[in-house]
Each structure stands twice: as structure tokens, then as C-alpha cells.
Image 1 (cartoon, rainbow, N blue to C red):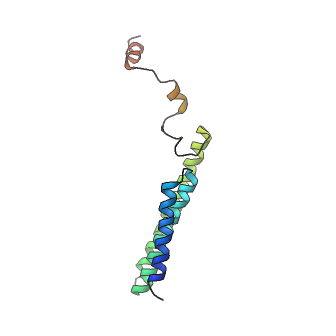
Image 2 (image 1 turned 90 degrees about the vertical axis):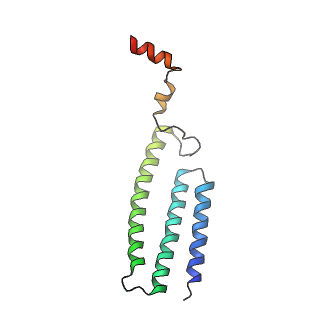
Image 3 (image 1 turned 45 degrees about the horizontal axis):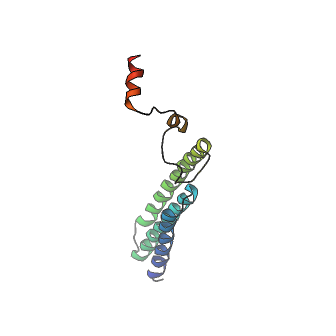
Length: 121
């Protein structure tokens, strides 16, 4: 098998993943695009491992490592997305601007003078 076939397929998968990360506004679709990019890297690692006929199979070992990291990333990412959706009511990237509590942001004082007045009292 030629190396060009899996390399071109991996490049196409990676390009679709980059487009998904840059163009999508839904957090779940962005996470899926990141997973697509990681799978393209996995395909390249296995293809180069088979092409080089490595006796240690380093490409396959790195692929297992990338799969493990991707599973942890998607688990934590989905947990964070569910928590943000539960508190904010949306999973849209453009609407999630502040990292703090939205209730605290609404009650924030208007200027530093009010903070000095509260501290003196």
C-alpha cells in the first residue's frame, strides 16, 4: 500500500476538523471536530508506522496514547459543556463570554467608588 492514500485521507479529515472548529458555534460540534482532528493524526501515526516497518511499533503506541488522551478530553469537555448548559441555558460559544457566575455579573457594582464606600462602611 502506498503512503499517499492514508496521508491524503488524514489531511482531508484534519481539514474538515479545522473547518469545524473555526466555523461552528456549538460547543459539542467543536468537540467533535477536535476528535476528528485527533483521529486524522492517529491515521497518520499508524500509516507511517506501517510504512517504516518499525520493530517497536512506536506509531501504534503513540496512537493508543492519543486515544487515551482524547477519551479523557471528551469526558471532561462534555462535563464542562453540560455544566455550562445547565447554568447558562445555552451551548453557543458566542453567548458564553464570561467565566464567572452570570448572577454575580448582573449584580456587579458600577464603579470602584462604590467598592470604597462598601469597604469603609
